[in-house]
Length: 287
Image 1 (cartoon, rainbow, N blue to C red):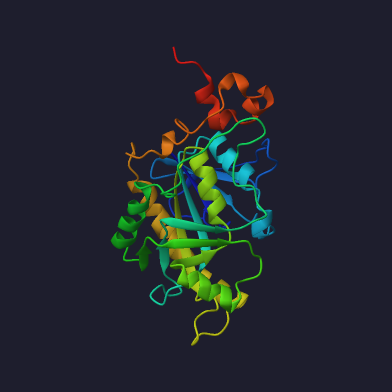
Image 2 (image 1 turned 135 degrees about the horizontal axis):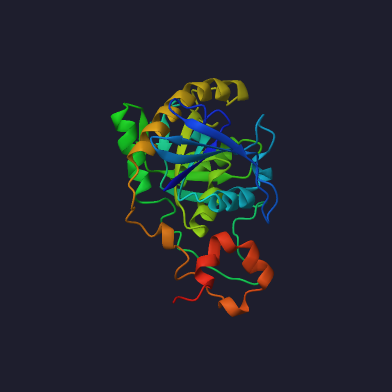
């Protein structure tokens, strides 16, 4: 078991993390967002990546999602936890609370969301986009630490970088959205293709712009609440890393077993090489 965490650059400054190393990787899909920081926490290997790069340099649409997830897979990550700021679309989800979404709606249009194509076809099951074993363990950890949270809910993933109009925000509420963000949908899809267990820790920072009694969201307000959320997310991650089950009873780790449609002999050698961390074990004949 190896746990990957994608989020802000400060997340790896966690109490108890030791044997810290920094590593840069090249991938067939370009360079990842930044260097990977690895360490050991509760006797388990953990790998961190700042999604937007150190110094917050990358727009949500500029994040190299393919490179980030490919590199996590290459590093041996089996469980991926994505931490991100979101706006709340529900009255009961208050700024400063955590949400563990179990569904996504994709409103992006500028980003690649699959490793496949170019001579190889695969169709993953994505009806339940979050690992059914990892997700409840986030809730268990939050309850144990008395951290305000909400279990389940739909994450609306928008393109950005501008926030929603009021009409859009009300529309997303009418769809049943719980939170709105700009990053996690691609990470969820690619993690499933890479056969990783995946879950999101969404940090509610504001009420988007739908809330009539609240001022329109500002960057200053978001950063203020984010600072309050960082300590909670670090505590939660530390607890979750220690409680994760060794053998999850889920299908995430075999997501391509029935979804890879192109026969190995028909896949171009170049693509086989590029996708070796993702599909290599399906290309080797069984003894």
